[in-house]
Image 1 (cartoon, helix red, strand yellow):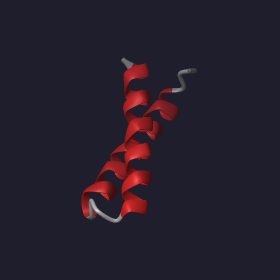
Image 2 (tube, rainbow, N blue to C red):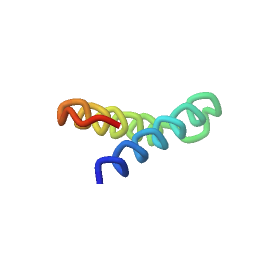
Image 3 (tube, helix red, strand yellow):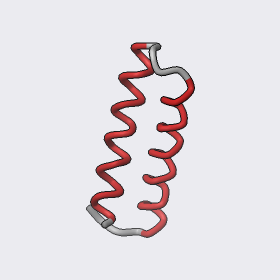
Image 4 (tube, rainbow, N blue to C red):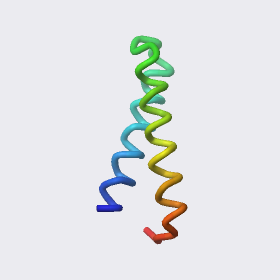
Length: 50
C-alpha cells in the first residue's frame, strides 16, 4: 500500500510539472502538487524505506 502511495505522489508531481509548463490546467495542478507533497511527507514520517 505504501508503494502505491509513493507511486501516486510521483505521478502527481509529474502531472504538476507538465501543467506548470503548459499553463493549461490552472489551479487544479497546484492542488495535485499539494496532495503529492502531503503523500511524500506521510511516507517520510512513517519512516519506511523504498
